[in-house]
Image (cartoon, rainbow, N blue to C red):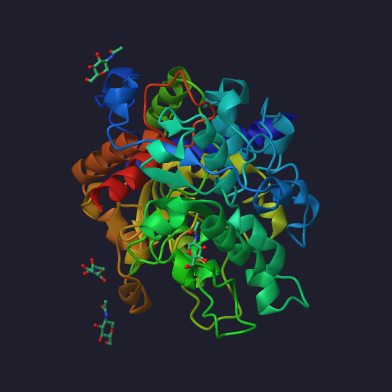
Length: 466
Ligand SMILES: *[C@@H]1O[C@H](CO)[C@@H](O)[C@H](O)[C@H]1NC(C)=O
Ligand SMILES: *[C@@H]1O[C@H](CO)[C@@H](O)[C@H](O)[C@H]1NC(C)=O
Ligand SMILES: *[C@@H]1O[C@H](CO)[C@@H](O)[C@H](O)[C@H]1NC(C)=O
Ligand SMILES: *[C@@H]1O[C@H](CO)[C@@H](O)[C@H](O)[C@H]1NC(C)=O
């Protein structure tokens, strides 16, 4: 115990020293964002608020959704998804953050917790869940059933929601051996037949006023129908799907029927108070580190970009950067939902290179922690989430073209050259967009538009425009 405290104190001393050098880059206190008065109220007047039309939710045969959740034990070859998909897709609440989960954390973090952030004082604790990043289909379905503009009369609807869990379906097949391409496509094709046969509405619009959520990246549904044996299903290449609006966590930027929605993070505030408390906490969080990075390099690849970043991160003077190599399970990047959040809460900038695809959940972990994202590909954010992020990337993020990093540009040098004023401006913008990026855990009693509301509003707007 004594040694732990001594270690903690030593780490704290180092941190304070660092703080003295680079200054406490916490978010400007004058920023009033996140206060409730600043959050757009949702007026609970249906005729006023459903100006973009009413939505009909299909009651699909169970094999298209709830049966998939029931087979949660076999959706993923490595682990059961039952716990992760529980609680309407939010996963189990983290409940009281046990101090044992932080015992393997770095000494500096212990100091941080010990003196500044008693784990019992982690704000809005009840709002945190162990959420799977691919659970959006369930989250959206649950919330749509309660949507204030839902109608039970399809003839009075201007939009149609299809609660097919396309991502859960495909996850059963992506890694399964012995599945033919027609097995992989089967349930999606059955769905399209069902829609055409059962209701006149699908044919009437050619699907253009229909929408669905696929909780995975677009590329998982884009196998060319002729390319048997390749990755994914060909759902999005089916002719009937052409005009159907698709909400995905990573869109194909060249397909106008797709809208990007945030990856679900672990934070699901249920009330205005929980959101306001968190925003205030993020705003006041000391940020002794200039740069944070959490990711797994791919040592098998020559000049792997994440390896380059990790190298630059590690070569920086100690304390300037925190780099977490997520390769080993023991790093806790996925097993401890708060570990990465804590890292990002203590940093000014968070590096967001592409992962296996262009986007990563980490972008959203960084934004909800008040950490300014540093992006290297346009496709990682700017071409993805237009309903959510300001049009001008410079408002809330730093862009360093990946080619220039490969050419030798040092990311830390670039970031160290950014003025205090610009940092303050970006931090305030991040706090402003934060409320729209989280999936709230309640359908009512809130006064801000969360990620779900923004998505539905956006898709209804698109359908109305057409
Ligand atoms: C709701 O909004 C409509 C349209 O503006 C208005 O006519 C109506 O009086 C409002 N109803 C209530 C209960 O506020
Ligand atoms: C919709 O179109 C398909 C394909 O043209 C057709 O097979 C189906 O019978 C139509 N459905 C209805 C309800 O008319
Ligand atoms: C994408 O990033 C480049 C920098 O590599 C930037 O100059 C360009 O404006 C962006 N492209 C588009 C189409 O926005
Ligand atoms: C990187 O280097 C190549 C070759 O020297 C050059 O053509 C390219 O413009 C550079 N790219 C950037 C973004 O600096």
